[in-house]
Image (cartoon, rainbow, N blue to C red):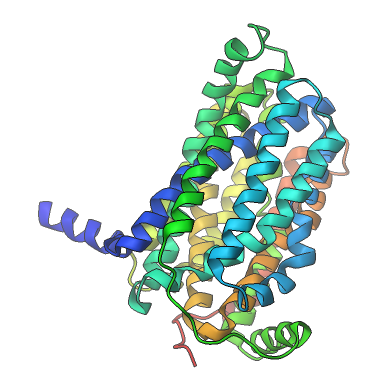
Length: 424
């Protein structure tokens, strides 16, 4: 059993044996923990400012992800031309500034819903460049044989940080009552502490990015920016293994992958939970996602689980709609997280192993477009369908979202890849 456990650990964490990737991975783990703590605090802040409105939550989410819808294709062309270090330093500094603005205005009681939306939009502009840049970095620090494992470990760090950050939110918000709100549990300034801690976390990742030895890539495109974008689109359109995966990810992002709206609304409105339970429910989802990423990291061919992840995701969302209270919601949300990450790691690995390096920034920006860029319309669709004042109500509305996701999966089922194609 000891030998088997050792073999599993070696196989699951194989990409971490590369020192530069290891430095980057641990710095991201710390920074993303702060980011998730801020994201959870921001969701709760919106519900506090709006009196528990799912529409307000949906609009803020739309503002945060709209830049990915508008800028992702352009961002990919920039990433294939400009050194990745410069792109990442610019995006991280921008995110640092927006986090500071949110912290100070919340602390001083000056924060308003329009201000939160404006800050969310500016953060989204930075993330439109940051996400594809980070995803295209995987091949910089590991050999091709370790790319699927590195993709899975990136997802693992994202979800370990989600779990820790969201769980810490309840603790930190309670601490903020004492440190910032003078013991008043209803004072909005208590929510500033998670934002301040996120500000501190950015300095570590900025140092690592500034000192990592990014390897040189082949010369970038020489055509116009518009032609670069068209070349990336032509490649995706003419490569079924990439195109069909992106269609599935985009369809599910429009429907059921909107847990940043579903979880806070169910926690606050459907279950009537406060900060601690809200953070714990979010953490349960993160634990399931972390388990999905670990499972994928240990698989020799993660693409085999692409369909499995989609099925688990839709069935567990239906189970959440039928869950009577927060106690039973914990394992159900863990299953939702497991299914979502099983699907997304498989999808990302498929795309990363197929695309040529010269097109990596543009294709990964298109992947971000369908995953994150569908967030604004998806958030509005989800918030409308699950609203207590909507046509279906929270429970039937969530079942409708799951049914739409299941229909998309069924339509693409036979056209999804089962094995990675080699790069051309």
